[in-house]
Image 1 (cartoon, rainbow, N blue to C red):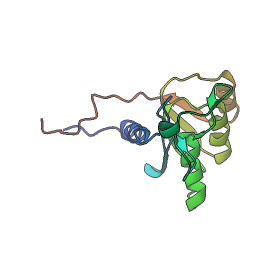
Image 2: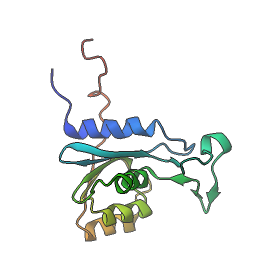
Image 3: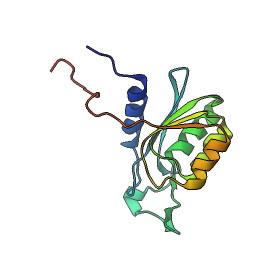
Length: 152
């Protein structure tokens, strides 16, 4: 039996986190990794204790749901809350990060972004990642490598 690759393992974790999303528009998951160890995970959803989009609908202003905190931000905030350094870490995200998440990723010291799906890839986000020497690589989840019953 061949083992799952690290990229597929961490990307699968992000897709699993996305299943917890409370956003009706797009389910996103993010996993922050340092030295092949998961230090945080996040999904897009409402502020803790607040109403969720799945319960009351999205709160859209200028084409964006302002009720939702993005998966990348939730994972980075989790690191800050619990004292886990993100300096030099990697992040695995189900979708290409938005411009604001791009800036937060850079500021947090994360050095590599792996994403599975292109999603409104903002040209300025791409430029900022390049300026900050943040490596960005598309690593699609290979559903054929995720076998929950390897004996069959």
